[in-house]
Length: 120
Image 1 (cartoon, rainbow, N blue to C red):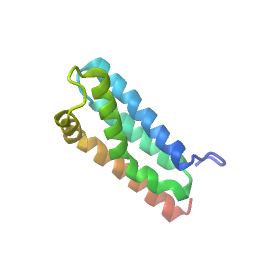
Image 2: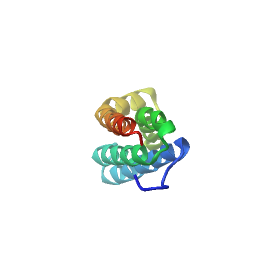
Image 3: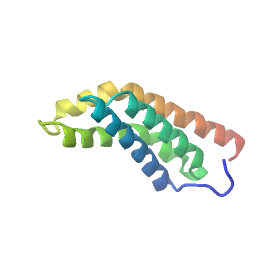
Image 4: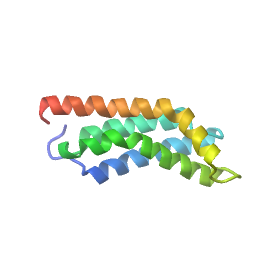
């Protein structure tokens, strides 16, 4: 980690949200649903946030991916769906987005573990 470069827990979560939102915009421009770009950007956001967040706020980054994905999925449904936000639409987005959420969460756990062991 670069000396002096740290994020608060809120700043780290905002980084993850912005990264996932950029992925969602790309996916929405390419097709009707969230997909690879959202998954990759969510993972990149968690990687960056977990590396830059203050050590005491690591837990917030580790638990963030499912919540951020839910937020992005609901926002995408609000913007791009003619039906609006429905329980079925949100459930489908969460089911199809589970691998992205799991991978991003695991990235956060691994980086948090490395930082914990290294004392950084």
